[in-house]
Image 1: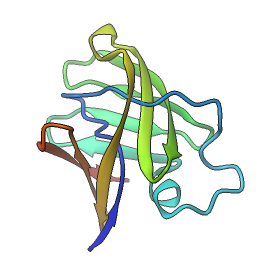
Image 2 (image 1 turned 180 degrees about the vertical axis):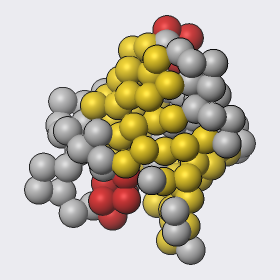
Image 3 (image 1 turned 60 degrees about the vertical axis):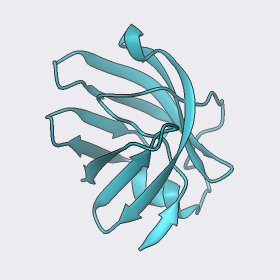
Length: 117
């Protein structure tokens, strides 16, 4: 299993890192390659879309719209959430990728796993 550092894009616990750098342009980082342009599906029905241009969208399990941005910085998935307001802010986190599963590790040691599509 390969280990990468990544953010928990959890529909249950989101918070990220600000950046003006597009995550993909000329980037061959393995984490960027694994996530850029992909949809992350949570078992609770929430989705996170990591657009290749650094935008982030999707829906919470409740149906609330998710709006923000993402970038890989210093080996971590960093995201800045604008909507929903309860998740607003910036956070960077570790992640592991195993096949089509991305597990985001929170600061408190808990994790959330998404299926990458």
